[in-house]
Length: 70
Image (cartoon, rainbow, N blue to C red; front, side, top):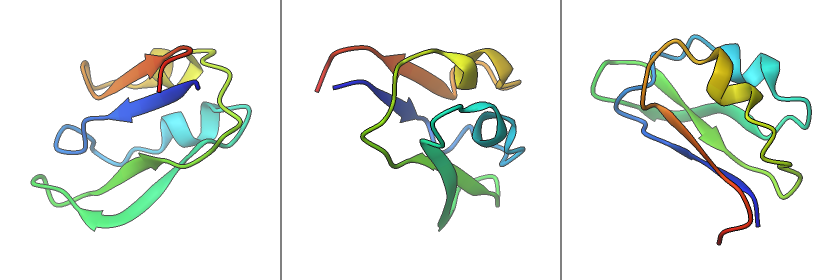
């Protein structure tokens, strides 16, 4: 199953990945991270592992796209 791993402590809640995802697999979570932001969270079975979220994220290491792994 394709999915996105979010390093929540690095996320600055810019929402660029949320807006870029064609399948709407990412959303702002309710938890506040160490930086004081609502980190993005992955929540979908529809992920195609296209990588759009990864490419638009300005914070290196925040998102990792996993293709075909559980």
